[in-house]
Amino acid sequence: MNFRPALGYLKAAFSDNGTPSSSRLLTLLHSSVATGVLIFYVAKTHLIPDGTVLAGLGAFTTAHYLVNRATTAFGKDQTTPAPDPAVPDAKI
Image (cartoon, rainbow, N blue to C red; front, top):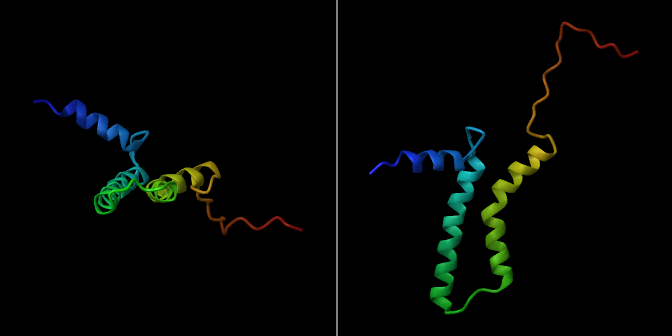
């Protein structure tokens, strides 16, 4: 059985243009936790949770990805270079 195509797909799915994406991996982890919580809740109460519980689990699951995308959208992921001490400030 050849797993190379599946591993290549997973590597591409959890990366941004070839670089590993921690937000996608954390989203996978939190999705697993939220799924476990949802199954536990339904098993204990025998009820489907309301929209507030589902919205909370959804926010918990996607918060990392949202923060990563928001910093990219507003340009906060770029670092500004430190000023060169050899060049004097030209303000008058």
